[in-house]
Length: 173
Image 1: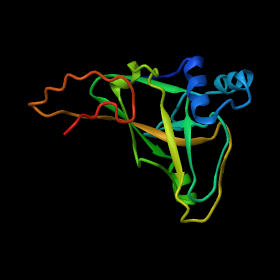
Image 2: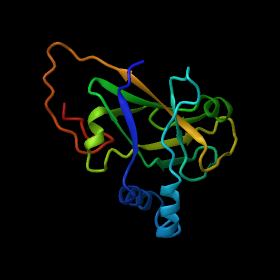
Image 3: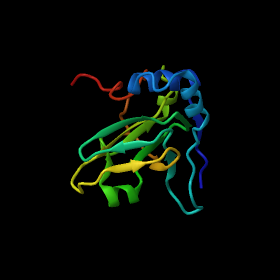
Image 4: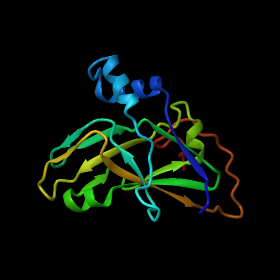
């Protein structure tokens, strides 16, 4: 196995800023400090697992059709030529049809250096077709990230520099 990446927590200031943007005050600064301290770095459950489990920093409850944007508190530094793909945990998708709003999250190697510290945010959707409310506890594994190597075309001349996420690298066509 190639060792090509390392997970880190974003700064407490970045986590608090993103949390407050998504949830508002959320119980005050001491509450946010406790959430930040409880963040667990992603890890594989077994030696044969391809995916690194991401853990919820807070409980979430989703009625059918509802979405939640989750600030994971995590960033990842990886070698160039690699990408982290984020998927929902298989069991949650199977039992509840819980899925990511954009199907697959793509974390590029240069995202680590963005102004937001490369904070990985995950937007989950209870698609509603099962008609079940989804209740997930803080600390529960809810998504998984898989590192994939990729190539580029022989005539690729990309020179742009990232500063942000969610469409920050797209240009006009």
